Length: 326
Image (cartoon, rainbow, N blue to C red; front, side, top):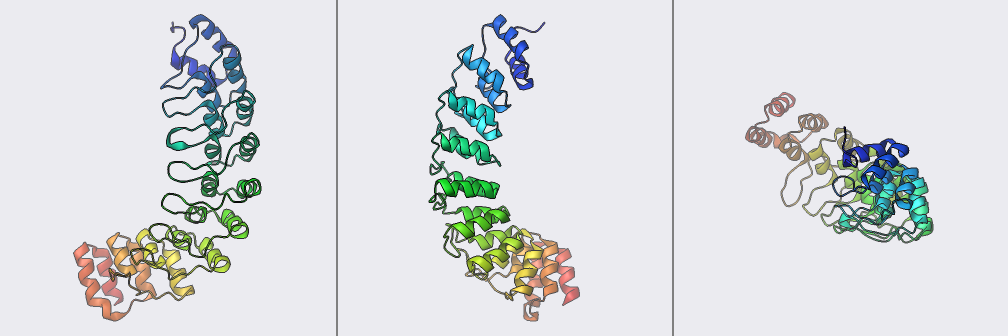
């Protein structure tokens, strides 16, 4: 027979929403914490069990501000999982709306990792500050840009018009983040309602256009060219252009777009390394991309040089393909 108050059993009862069985167990055991520093309130909030949350707080007097080992409070759990009823209950009992977990994440930041518009609205209406930053320098708007829900972005811009004026510790903007993660609708909101500088750069000199190309989001790259005057030939702090970065990650469609549609020189060299896109693709073992670059036509005076380069890297497939074409 199971020992009354066994933490694993109690957590399972909470997770499954078995309030009556939980009541019996707690009466027999006289209360219990959860697992790994979590209280049963954490477990109830995480799994959206508002009735159990209320029972634990009101009957057993469990502390709604109790923190686990990551300094998460029940409000963090409810907000991150989008459990609106639990969030409303905790806020109604006076939970601290801008409490911090490890890495300085607030419940609002946690809510912004998902498409949780109702939860986000409730947190803001109870005083959550969208301008607070975590240890990496991201505020809630920056986090929401990674998720890419245009409704959340529109709402945050409405309640806090300056929230877009933010950079991470390495100077990445929400525009960088949305471009990297392929959030087309979010990009449309950002370009329509915010005033980011064309080709804004992070600490590595990377622009949102480079991010889009390197991750294969050609539709976003096109939008940045059309609506944001992005420069397709801009280079980063190491002298690499979007073409070079696309070669590193093997984005063949993006490479074709740059070369065939935009007229980027396929032989352009990064400064000061003097490496071409073919060098980068070969170095990273991107055989398909090597084939794409060769099909687009590199100049013949590089032939001997690249034969030696492929031999040096041990890329026999690329060497054979190169020799067949040239």
